[in-house]
Length: 121
Image (cartoon, rainbow, N blue to C red; front, side, top):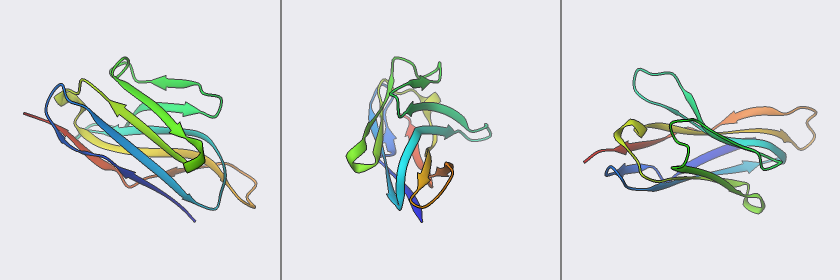
């Protein structure tokens, strides 16, 4: 019913930039919160950034000032601009959304399949 598809991952050198995209499709009525998580090898999944419908943002301390989350409501798409990347940013990045479907009565969480970001020289 709902698909979240990430794109934009890849290999980048330290100090470089990448922009991730997440496109949501399906019978979506409204999206409450959209965000990005990441999971590095042998580490727990952690919140990177999220953006609410009211434009409130939250960032992990480790990415503040370097990453920016934004969205295009008309396209049900959101982005993660990542600058000044370091090897510590290497992880699989997952997009997520808390949304409600047409004809549904409750908001639910959905996840993308993940995209690999590798920061290495």
